Each structure stands twice: as structure tokens, then as C-alpha cells.
Amino acid sequence: MLSYIRIRNFAIIDEAELELSPGMTVLTGETGAGKSILVGALGLVLGDRADGVSVRHGAERAEITASFEIDRGSPTLAWLREQALDSEDECVLRRVISREGRSKSFINGQSVPLRSLTELGEQLVDIHGQHAHQSLLRKPTQMALLDTHGGHADLSKDVARSHDDWQSLAANLSSLQDQQKDREARLDLLRYQVRELDALALQDGELEQLELERKKLAHSGKLMERAQQALQFLYEDESGSAQSLVSQAASLVGGAVELDPSLKATLEMIGEADIRISEAAEDLRRYLDGMEIDPERQRQVESRLDSAHELARKHKLEPHQLLAHLATMQTELENLENAESRLEELTEEVTRAKSNYLEFAKKLSAIRVRNATKLSGEVSAVMQKLGMPGGRFVCRVTEVNESYYSAKGLDDIEFLVAANPGQPAQAIGKVASGGELSRISLAVQVILADSSQVPSLVFDEVDSGIGGGVAEIVGRHLRKLGARYQVMCVTHLPQVASQSHQHLRIIKITDGKATRTSLSHLEGEEKVEELARMLGGVDITTKTREHAREMIARTAGG
Image (cartoon, rainbow, N blue to C red; front, side):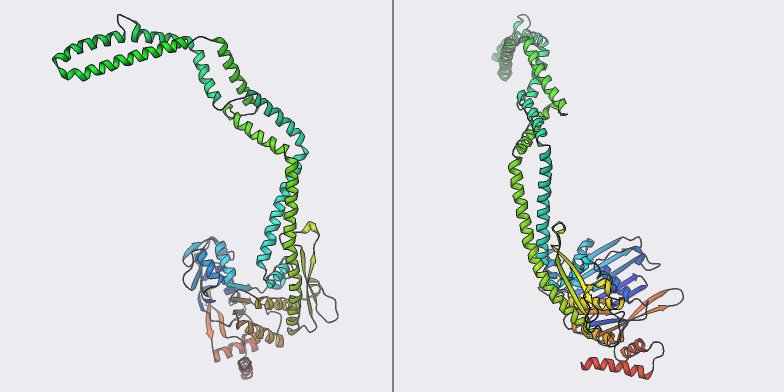
């Protein structure tokens, strides 16, 4: 339930605070005082789109705060906990709008995206606008109203999901069928390319090894020359090789060890050096024995590398990418060769997906047909109470052509009406006058509100275009709704306002330089005076006040 709303610098409202109670609350005031502006502010804090034009002239930003009492165990509380936004049994929404049109949204003090505010707002308040009768002419609105009345949200989601699955598979099937048209040409090309790469028989890491071997073969003469010189310096030059010099050093230090044992470690290191030199010399001999200048092998290596590079250029790749490219082509080739069986499998999957969609969609259609009958009867009954005796409302459900099956189901929903007894029901936009359309819209909204899952309902001048006894009946319906829901109603009709549990008056105040609004609770004689103003205009007489008191008394007695 909405318990509190505060508005700062929004439109002509500089600052307003409003505490709300359960039951039916009416907002009244002169035209232009700001009644519907208050509803607009509530819409913004619930997630409606905003722009800088709504900021009060001279202010940098507008700010709207709304507090709600949340019942324990309600889906709304579960949603808040799931989003880690819960705060005991209260929920505070806040919206800040800058003059540049930027806005920030908060839930229980935490900054949130606007979509979160909108998602939560839909669970807290249902606003029935004063122009609802215009949208009533649109078929998408008519379907949404019927589905809202039916309360089958889960089934509607199943229909939408299964339709998406069906269409996704159907798109895949269509793509595969298109591929089939060029299948043979693609198969020929792939088979040729795979054979070509298979014939190369390239091994993993082979190119790197070939590059190293080519470098070695190209410089084999220089490598042999340098290895031979190194061997000469290390071992084979008897007059000055490293080995002979180390041997001489070992002999000298060995004699010195007898005089100074501390040189023993040095002698051991010289011995190790001698061993290392001998091992290195042996390695160089083996290297030289294995080396040969082999022009034929060099030609083979160059030829293999050239073949790999040529294929890489042909496929617009780097040589090291050839093996991965071969694997990709082999996979595509296998898929194309197996395309016939995949085509059969996918065709069966599409058939199953369509069957699954039709199963859900036909269930939804059956529920819509039953609910359309129920909605037709309920709206017709309210229409007749709203000054349209003999008026008849028909919600017609017909199945569309298969090419129009959609995520919304198989149905075309159309609202028809017969404004007078004996007339055939026709499309609502063709036969209903403006006043009749307003009454029909109100009847639909009253019925939908009566089955609402949202705790707070707002009616923004939905009673325009009616008066007299019909207005009193409207007031009774709204008061009756107030026994189950929190109802807020912006009205200009005293017959409606007199039946409220709480009465608020909005007035516009100007000093010639600036305009602002003031909000006050009316009780007792204040409420009588406001009803008298609504009944009699500028000149309020004793008789008008008596009429106002009679209306209030009649409501209390009823």
C-alpha cells in the first residue's frame, strides 16, 4: 500500500507531501490545479520515462519519493529480497530528474537501473489513465486487457518461449536448406582442398624443424670450419691447445700441493676443467663426423618448405595455420556429407517444436475463449449500470491464419459493442460515441481492477463525460473496490468524491510572479464546502451545502 509521497520542484508543484490511508481516496480541485500532475509524479517514481521539461521553472532538479507498506509473504517482498533490496516491511522509491533530462533511480536507498524501478512499480500500483478509452480501440491493448483479466501469465510465457524455440529451429532449417542449393559445388571444392593439404602430409611442428634444418644445411661449410678450429684449439694443437696448457697447470699445482695442501681444491678444479675439455673435444669430433655438405637434402628441405608456403598463400594463411585450417575444412566436409541426415533430424525437431507451441497456444486459446465470455458478461452488466441500458459488450476470440501465429498465440482479439438493444455488436471504434467509449472503458477498468493482483489502484479522471446517477454508481464501484484495495481517484464529480474514505484538495496559488500548489486533507465541514463548490460553482448557497451533506450522509448510511 502507498503510505506516503513527497514531491519537490515537479511541474507547478514546488513541494507537496501526502500521507495516504487504506480505502478510497479522492483528489479534487479546480481545473489546472495539479491533480493529474500528482498522478504523473507518481508514475515517474514508479518508472515512467522522464525529461527535463517536468522540472519546475527555476529549479535544477525534481525529486519524487514514495513509501509503500509491503505485506509479509507477498511476491513484491520476495522480489526485493531476490534483488537484495529489502528493508523490513517498507519500501521507499526515489527518482531524481535533472533539468538536462538525466535521471537517477533508487530503491531503499540503493541506486538501481530504471528497468528495476519499472519492474517493481508494476507490482505496487496500477494506474488507469484518463485517456485509457483511446487505447481501448487498439487490438494489442484489447488482447492485453483480456489476458490481464484471465491471469494466465505463466501460460503466456510458455507460449512465447515455445514460439521462440520453434522459430529459431525453423530459421536453422531454412539456412541449411539454402546451403543445400550450393552443396555439391562446395563439396567438390572442399574435397579438392582437403586432398591437397592431405597430400602435403604436414606434421605438427614439422615446419619449425624444417626451418632449422634449412638454416643448418645452408651454412654447413662454415659450421664444419668453425667446429674444426675449435677442436684444434681445445685438443689437437700440441704446442698450445687448451688441453695441453691445462695439463701443464695441473702438473705445476700438483707439485705445489705437496708444499701447501690448501691448493688441493684448486687442483681438483683444474682436473675437472681437463675432463670438460676432453668431453667437449669428443662432442666436436662426433659433430664433425656427422656433418656433410648435402645439396640433395638441402634441395628437398627447400622444396618442402616452398610447397607449404605456396599452399598457405593460396588459402590466404600463415604457414603455421595450415593444420588448423585443414581440421576446419574436414569438419565442414563431414557436416556437408552428413547434411542429408542432419536435414531430416532438424525437420523433425522443427515439427516437434511447432507441435509443442501449438499445444501451449491452443490451451491459451481455450482459456481466452472461456474468459472472453466471462469478461463480456461482466462488462455488459457494468455498462448497463453506467447509463447504457441494453448495452452489450462482446470480446470476440478468433483463430488467425497460420502465417500470423506469433509469440502472443493463435488468436485475434477484438472488442465489439452494441450500444442499444437489438443492434448487432460491431467494432467498438465504429459504433461508440466519445461519451459511450468513456463509459465502456470505465466498465472494463472497473472489472479489471476487481481482479487485480496489485494492492494500489489509481484512477485519473476516468469518470469524465458522465454525471448524475451514473456518476453515483461509478462512485459506489470505486468505494467497493476500496474495501479490497487502496484506491486513489482524481475526479471532478461530487457524486464520486462524496463516497471517499479520505478526501484531498489541491489548489493553485499565484502571487503574479510564480505559481505553486497546496494540498490539504478535508474533513467535516471542509469536505462539505468542497462538495458544494463542485456542485454549485462560484456561488455556494445554503441549499447547495445541504445537498452536499445529504450526499455524504447517504454514503455513510449505505
